[in-house]
Length: 425
Image (cartoon, rainbow, N blue to C red; front, side, top):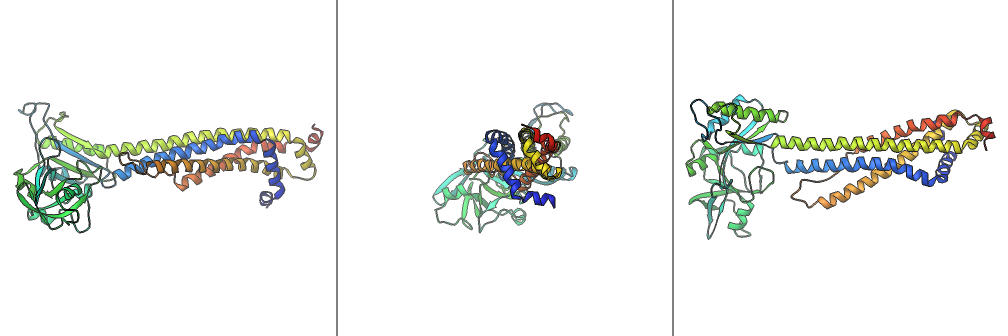
């Protein structure tokens, strides 16, 4: 009751504001220390969150724990085979990997033409227009690893397409623009891919971060691809997705080890199979973002503590300057608890005001960063924000620190004896 009475007492607030007015410059300079601390925390943690959001958006259509694996040449002789032996992945390798590595959730064998610069793309013709475009042979399971956004009215390759070796294809936005008229719906139309007619079943929207793909790519069933180009059971590379809770680095090592054993490659040969671990890169980015957030927390709290200590020093000086005033209040019947609460309230008030201004300033800076980075397509950054619980937590910490630091000048004020205070000049 006493606390509530003091908090809502008009005289208490008049004394607090009166004390602040007497030491305006000193109070402002000290409060800036707390303001700067919370500002640094909000700005840095918000900026780190923006980077985190940007990479999540960049990889939103790709399995987080995904990787690619392909065959190269051996660099170590083994079991009678010479160095430099050219290796070739096979379709059955996918089954072996899936069975022997429990952490693999999905594996998609893939073939392609015109992707890595070693060969030209497929010649595609529609009416009087033609061009060369990269072409992929895929299984439907590939969309479990890197989803494909297909425009309304179309679809991606399905299991029946594979089973029946259908001559169907999914073309890209660029392919549609270059081979079809502006208002001509390509769904259901026929195009010639290397002199073989294929029916268009979908148009895919290009999504960055999905691997090697571009906006002009054409996808056909894996079974049709190998008949079209006589590749048999050969596979150019595997797209692999591990379970979300799996160790993606360990999975990558396991994939290499199983492939080496299957293709009789020396266990220490590091060049025989190449891999690109997208999951490892993603985890490093997330780790960097978390490190930035933690750093902002440490720097922010350290600066806040320094500022709060400054507020405590100001209140100590204020108590010394108000010795006679406090003595009069004690002589008129003010209890030690009332005097203590007033000093603590002043400390909490200054800390809280500084914190609110710091949060507002940090929010304006993050808003400016957000506006400046909205149209960036080549840099993964979006929506730099600080979660509300973090902001509330920071304010609670500031109130607690303000209370604790206020206890020192409050105890100093309570220790003043009325008779000694009245003699003070």
